[in-house]
Amino acid sequence: MSFFAPQIKIAATYMRGGTSKGLFFKLDDLPEAAQQPGVIRDQILLRAIGSPDPYAKQIDGMGGATSSTSKTVIVSKSSKENHDIDYLFGQVSIDQPFVDWSGNCGNLTAAVGAFAIHQGLIDPIKIPENGYCTVHIWQKNIEKTIIAHIPIVNGQIQETGDFELDGVTFPAAEIPLEFLDPADDTGKMFPTGNVLDILDVPDIGSFQATFINAGIPTIFLKAEELGYLGTELQDEMNNDAVALARMELIRAYGAKKMGLIQDVSEIKHRQHTPKIAFVSSPKSYTSSSGKQVSMHEIDLLVRALSMGKLHHAMMGTAAVAIGTAAAIPGTLVNLVAGGGRKDTVNFGHPSGTLRVGAYAELEDQQWKVKKALMSRSARILMEGWIRIPFVL
Image (cartoon, rainbow, N blue to C red; front, side, top):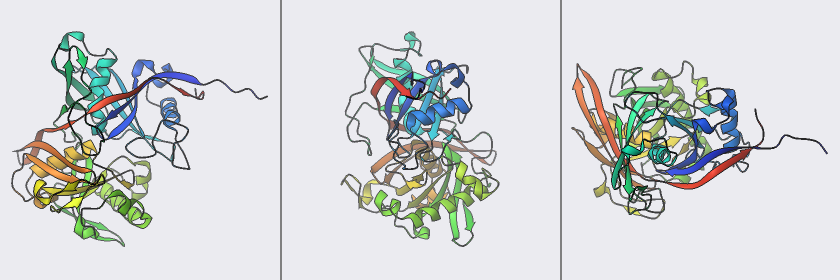
């Protein structure tokens, strides 16, 4: 009989945050070799999630074979002044052997503060007997501050509640989030210098587009110019390989125009960012759960793709981009939503609706967004240890 090394076990928590779920780790609980960025860390996270999987099922791991469920989070006490914790997000490729560290996950952000409290990373003096524990999060991928307000009842995190989030089956406790100064500090909020551009894609066509760095780099297009209504659900797009390939090519040329890549071939190594979304004026439709969404309750329709497929709801970071773009006159999102200054918008997505707010100001001829606001929910699904074959 051949000898193989036994599995190793690592303390981990499996959590839902917003419309995503993933594996959460305390930095100190990772093997020493994985406490720094590098190949060992990526190998551990890939194996834990079950990637790369040519079958695209992640059967031999904790992933759920979708962009919303192939996610990892590493949390530690913060070394940043006036912050409680550092939060690092890794989007694990399903069928390729890499972890994308290029952006944040806004949905899992909702679970980070609660995870930190559960793990003893928050000073007990900050946790009230009843009320909200305000957790200042340093998001290391994008180097931004996020503030999470975690509900506390009788000294314990309140996970159950009556807050309903379209895209999540059951109600839970509401967690308000503030994304401070969400625009990318490494460049302009609008990388081309324009709030509205024309994107030329060889052999595909030319499209009106807004390119924005807020929450996450995002390309906004107009649904009708792509041949869509804006009411599409997952099956309508995700079963059409030709349509998905076309959208990925458009995303590649958009990423190049944003300065994120130098050649369109590089997009295959950048699955997480930029996001690509298409917008349309309000229309009534039936959501994926059968819920009727009336055109009178929304300001616009948005459909976004993540890792090459139409997202079942809306990525939290993309929602920040939507709120920010809607607040700035002249962007494609703003124009489709009716124009003018908008501090909040309610938009329709495949699972229902979502409200997001943003506060924009014009300073020295440049648009600045002080904060974006939204609410999510989160809860622990399982906690203990994961086991993976020896990779060190």
